[in-house]
Image (cartoon, rainbow, N blue to C red; front, side, top):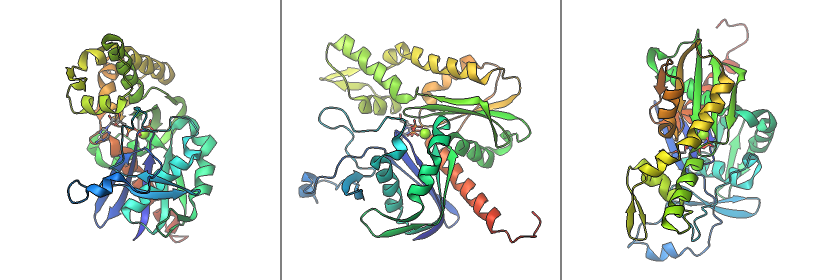
Amino acid sequence: MKVSVFAVDVGYGNTKSAFRMGSDIATQMFPSVTPIAVSEAVSSYGQGVLHARKVLPIEVDGATYEIGPGVELSSAYGNAGRTLSEDFCLTSNYAALLGGSLQFAGVTEVDRMVLGLPVHTINKYSAHLRDAFTGTLNFGHGDIRVHSVKVVPQPLGSLVSFSEYGGSRFDRENAHLVIDVGYFTTDWVVAHGFTMNDRRSGGAPGGASQVYKSIASLIAKSEKEPVDDIERIDKCLREKKPLLFYGKDVDLIPYLEQSQAIINATVKEMQNRVGRTADLRSIVLTGGGAALYEASIRAAFPRVQLDVLDAPCYANAKGFLIVGEATLARERKPVGVAA
Ligand SMILES: Nc1ncnc2c1ncn2[C@@H]1O[C@H](COP(=O)(O)OP(=O)(O)OP(=O)(O)O)[C@@H](O)[C@H]1O
Ligand SMILES: [Mg+2]
């Protein structure tokens, strides 16, 4: 299938993508986990009895990874193999997640692929992403032709989504503060219209996973057993369920309350960097970890309106799609025709 724009937000936690299908926007998400594929998967013997897992083999640099919504999250020892380093976008794991997005969508040709990077690494890595993913790609399922790649700061995607879907709440004459709470990083941007104020924008490694890690170590202390299964803590918190731990249903809320200091520290750092907030029309809260941070942000900025985005996981990818379409349209406009 050929698409005009394909937008991918490869995050440390989840890989999200968006593209146009007729008048609808198709979105997909899977965990950013890249185990090496096992050739004779035991799960295939259960076919017809058990559902086959929804994964695809994706080849990068001679290695084959299993990618997709059905990927195994908890390996035997709790480490699911997420890459949590700043140079994530240089790794084969990143390429495999990107390849998985294209392959699951069935894309074979793209005019413009839009990718995002965290605010504090965009200058360092955007040229690499453009070079690595423009041209003919192959992940073991046939050629995929990508004619151009555009790289944007991740929170800008949410700002564009907000301007498109936020009704009259987006104020292009004044500034908004966009806060994107991800799995590993919390990024923020102060933007006037779509122009970012670099001095007031930044990022900190204070995402949802740090909170889960703190909860895990608090449980470990009180249960006197090692706890490293942060994936299950994440899922139980999201589904508002207790955590099953050796036959016991552990209520996570008290542990979450005890971990509040981690959230507050990140919010404090952001507050210092953003400075006075009298000029902000609103704070736009986005990213899959938005709910974890909401109370702390409200307390820190009591006089600023808070706009919490719907489906915050997808907001960046949907905004990237709009950025891709707008830039393509601008470039294709014949010279001499007024806007
Ligand atoms: N349906 C869902 N499936 C998986 N995770 C979800 C879902 N809804 C919300 N989340 C939450 O999203 C969080 C991750 O957020 P998000 O996907 O925005 O991070 P990311 O963009 O991958 O990370 P980063 O921005 O640090 O690179 C997880 O901690 C999880 O709790
Ligand atoms: Mg993110």
